[in-house]
Length: 349
Ligand code: ACO
Image (tube, rainbow, N blue to C red; front, side, top):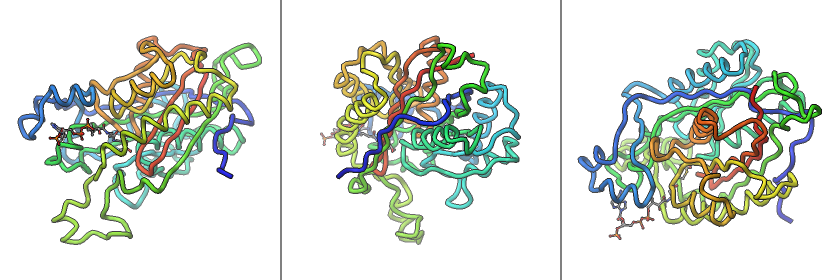
């Protein structure tokens, strides 16, 4: 019998009480890439929807992007850093294997009372981190958990490999998870939004080889040979990942909707991981969602992996496309292969 991993959130109501983002300044357009790679703006736009991406300067690591995003999320929530109980960093481009990138982000953001750990579940990391945070806050284990998606993916991409170099961009986004009643928002009993409703998370380890950084861990330690063979860079079977993503999004979305007793028609905003516009369009069509209910920013940032969903949430809210009471479906997928869906009734102060 398959493990049932889709469940409505039990315990006290929880919500995202603050959002923050940080993007490096340097913009790299498709035309810039086509000057150094055998590719073109036309090909990249038509096959992916991406027009440009941000790239971090040399010396800047994922935590350097995550720290300002975390500080901005705390300011947005009106919370002091010492009130944070836990910092979870979701990333596929950690500063180092050890210590956790979250440790530096927590330290530099002033979260002196917080524990810290990293989530390494590919581009699904933000949703996994959100599920861990929401469950812990709902159960009363913690009051305030910061989930930071932080990526300098350009460091783990072979810039001479046109099949991956065109897809990814650097950036960070953070979300603070807190009890609904502690925010200034109207509580559920007063007829206000209910906050985070539930999750569906999953994993298919059989697809691990489709998307990986082969060397640098205990399975294939670093050596001259691994460096010579470029095995510290991301390897991707794009077609396989594409098939997986277009299949899993509708299935996982259906599961979380069913568990939370909601319908596709209730969704106000679909916030998918920003991998490829064709994956997003296909998933939206399978779900029966009209284009105006789908949020995308991959045109400007490319695939920012674990940062893509919090970046979208922050921009959607700023643009007035995510308002108090709106039902948002967040959907991540990536290396593992993993996937994760979250339903949230958005609550703004
Ligand atoms: N520029 C020009 N031509 C290219 C490029 C490029 N950048 N890349 C590949 N091509 C060529 C190929 O060589 C091929 O040429 P051929 O027909 O002469 O053999 C042709 O274009 C078609 O290549 P495909 O790989 O079939 O192109 P496809 O339409 O499948 O698009 C892509 C490739 C964009 C990678 C797509 O498969 C995809 O988006 N997959 C999902 C990737 C993804 O989302 N990864 C991240 C997951 S999240 C995480 O955890 C990191």
